[in-house]
Image (tube, rainbow, N blue to C red; front, side, top):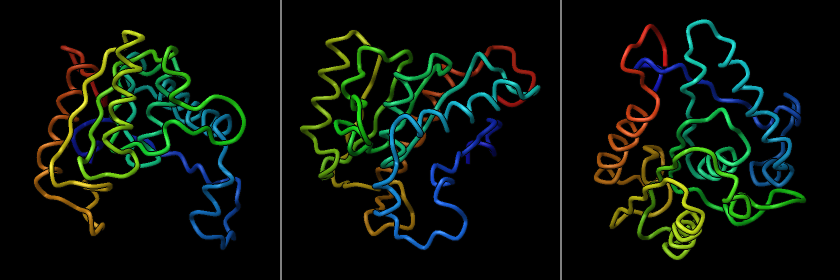
Length: 193
């Protein structure tokens, strides 16, 4: 969707260490992920974008859904190359993957503005979790804006989910696109963003 709008987009395979023949289920595979490896993989994707001749390397952003929303928070702290992050229902933000600090514990390190989209009926992240994230970002004077959608639970933007809520998707996605436009699009554009 972002590529169709003129953005250069990349999605790193965080499970590449499992090998092509891995038959483990998703929870098992996810349990092996570790934040340092995730950071390394996403930094590799960022590095590829930074060297691409048609990409403005000074205007890179990150978007993620569910675990990917958690990774937006993590990478907003771990990378100085990102200029905007948009997280959709980022669950598990207060829990580390492996040893070390959680993304939440790294809030003071966040380098870019973050926009968050949350379902009012979500359990992970719950409305209480969203308030904790908001409070921590405010405490460290980190630019952010959060949006909550009534009648929406986790995965409300995922058209393949039983939780898909067209009203919340129709409200949230344009806000995300406007946010990226505000933070990533130069007044003079000469190719993919």
